[in-house]
Amino acid sequence: MTVNKLIAITLTCTSLFAGNAFAHDDYQISCDTNITSNIAFSDNELVVQSTKQEDILFKANGTVFLDGTQVALTTDEQKLAQIYYKDVEAAIPMVVDITIEALKITNMALVEVFTGLLGEDNELPQELNIRINDIAKSVEEHVYQDPNSLTFNSAYLKDDIGLGDDLDQEIDEMKAEIISSVMGQMIVAIGKSMLNGDGDFSKLETRMENLGQDIEIKAEALAEGLKEKSIDLCDKIKTLDETETKLRKVDELRYLNTIHFNKNA
Image 1 (tube, rainbow, N blue to C red):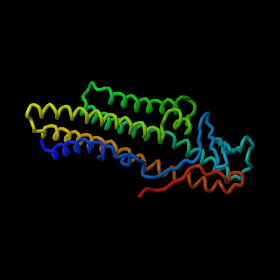
Image 2 (image 1 turned 90 degrees about the vertical axis):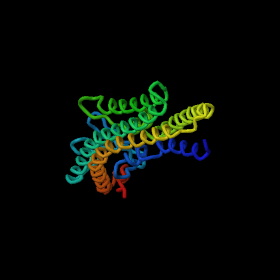
Image 3 (image 1 turned 90 degrees about the horizontal axis):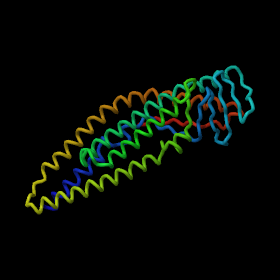
Image 4 (image 1 turned 180 degrees about the horizontal axis):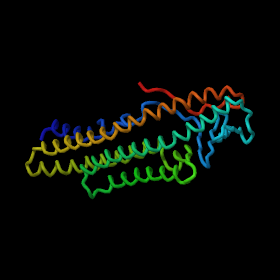
């Protein structure tokens, strides 16, 4: 077996993890959203932290409190506060739906390809599957824990459930461990083949190529539905950003600047 052949097999393996089936951007919503402070929704009340760490409480009827003190609003301003409250409430299940679906797509793509390479009994893909499913379940349980009101706490989802940058790092670390295991098994298999005088690795290469294409097709089909859902969510986020801008004209709410919307190219 030539060095070039070994490199070709190695690239075929690693390309499975770099292809479109695993591209995070494929599952991202079609807008960039930056939430700069905590948003909490429970007991039919919305609490948003201002850039000055003030607690701004919105009630369904348009009443607003700043650190416990009611803010005097005109009729139009109260209507804006009602719209803001209702739009946040409407956005929560949309965010949950897209988040869980994106987790399922990631789970399917990663677990299927790793299982295909390592075998059904390997523990590493199973650990990844359990971790992602646990997060999806925790998100659902958090948001729908109260039958009378949605529950949403951005800090809790990120810090306690782990739905933040740490999750990406954790998955990357597990992927690196799995890739290392795959490469180790490949080297052992190649060594045995060389000892047996078998230098034909075309079957292994073909299997990897077919596996990558199969996963990519499945992931893209699932992601299409996700992209369509993201359009509605982006519209809602844009509206929320615009409403915040209008509400900041109220002097007491001048530091309300939590949601930032940018349309992706």
